Image (cartoon, rainbow, N blue to C red):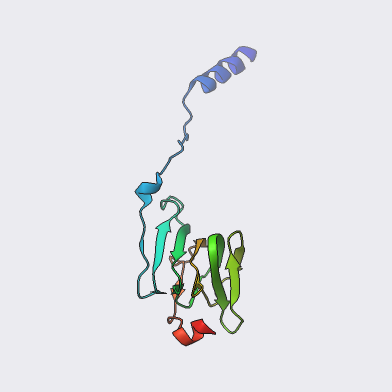
Length: 152
């Protein structure tokens, strides 16, 4: 029995792993980015993917809002995590006071909570926006934040 176990161990160690995978590196310049759609953003927002779509149920974007720019009202079926990387901005939940966000802050927007986020009127802000997909959708967009609502 002992020779069989030794032979099996040697064979397994010498064989290539059946399910081995290799790490992949995606270079930042290969990810690209684009100005956010005027359908979903007011002002200038630049949205760059953080990683390629290898994780089919999670997406992340690094979003930079220039002063005065903001998202439209929206919800996320699995919620959204915002990790502020630079600058100062605002985030607001429908029916609540607008909140200041700054570099280093982390904001959790629970599932289906309507909110918007963006720059202040005088400063830019950048953040990672991380969300999961539920039934093929990661976001449900609503109407744009009006200039009057933004100024409050």
